[in-house]
Image (cartoon, rainbow, N blue to C red; front, side):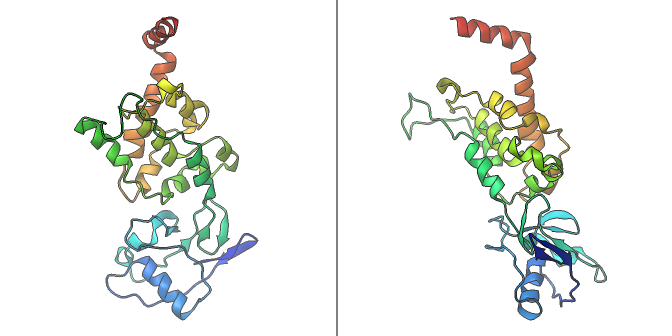
Length: 246
């Protein structure tokens, strides 16, 4: 278990009783109750729906409440450390405010001017496409494992990370979003303001998502393709020129 604060820290060994059916968060709570009453850990629902108890277990970003102890051998040493991509507050608690800053930078849904609330209509296929991305619980495991954020602190200024590029992609493919009519080009914004080009589609964000969202295949790659079409397809370029001229 990693113990420390922004000034530094270290791994400390603990031996804790494990009962059948328990998850890592249960062990953390028992550790707090019996051996380390000042251990800091963030959690809330213990049902894999709030995203609060994100940490790294044996080096892999995971939810403490969704990682069963039965996945480890009895003789295994289970190492729990804070999210590596974000500054440590204390012990397993990290400062994830970077993510909320990026969330505020993403322009929200722009409703169509000609439709009143209650008049929106969408094809079921479009509903299902967006619904996958709406399953996100904002645990920020994808943000933590993305090497663009994790290994390069200087990129945080210009890179939104997979969670918020996924949000851009969701809004860009939304059939009722009227952003372009208001002069907002989400494709250009994703590429030039939020760092879509930094993503090299290694799919590490998809691999750690506890909701099973196919972030890379269904959001980031399609968004990259639409950006490329806008920028390099000669027919799209010509069509945009004609549209602007008319």
